[in-house]
Image 1: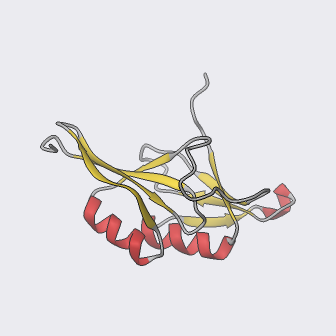
Image 2 (image 1 turned 30 degrees about the horizontal axis):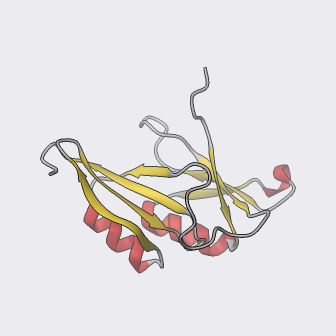
Image 3 (image 1 turned 90 degrees about the vertical axis):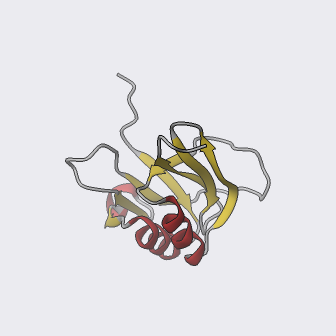
Length: 131
């Protein structure tokens, strides 16, 4: 056992974060605040018959990460069909480049971004021709 089954993204502004992840990745949200006792929205990240997991946006319980601070925790990476189109949506919705697109030679394109809440996340487009 020990397989990852759920993730949580800590946010300062729930509506802003829901808009960002909804507009960029097409996620939908279900309000579980009554169960959690705090603002907590389940994130449905895709169809149940596709690989992947669902998670949640939850109200941040402390200070946001400082710009330039090293990673302290996990970075979630989302698989995408079109890296460049996804990056365009990220930037249009207020995200920022943390580590620009680079090739994993013979495997994929990878890069990292900051969401509107200051959290780091990655995007990954498989491409056997990446170099």
